Length: 184
Image (cartoon, rainbow, N blue to C red; front, side, top):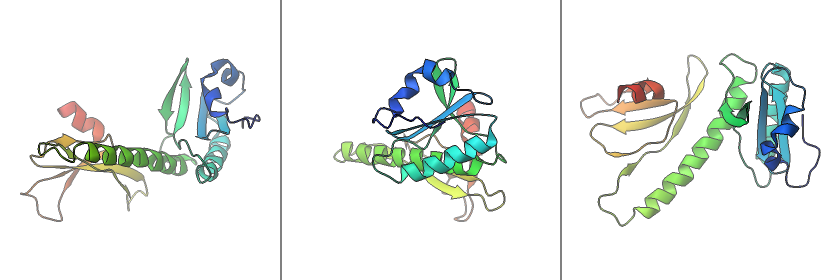
């Protein structure tokens, strides 16, 4: 489903749950708002619909006033970020759009924080997000690097690469974000 209104309010219609609930879809309702004139809705069990949604969103994000490449799933009256499982026909494209959006937002935030702390000699280290594609699985991921003994601010990513002085230059350990958070 593509909102037909073209009145610069399509993105805000995402909060009109009654409007979205009326749309017949296969599975849970999914939505994307790649720009203010575009609200896309499909079902989580509609593979072709998800692929088409990703294609339209990718093109719309190249235009004026892009909003987000994040896919949202409606749970009750709450929208939450959503990604299909690896291997799904829309997975790679939706993951790439998500990473482009989130990494861009983190980079903007990092730049603002660096300016805020520019004069502070006790400023924390502000980590960046790195995206890469696994050469074995083809999966796109986001990672951040945590250095041994470095206090700082780190963005939430798919994985964390730990670096330590005692590691050889070509050796690092990558651990999933959830595993890191549960071990803190």
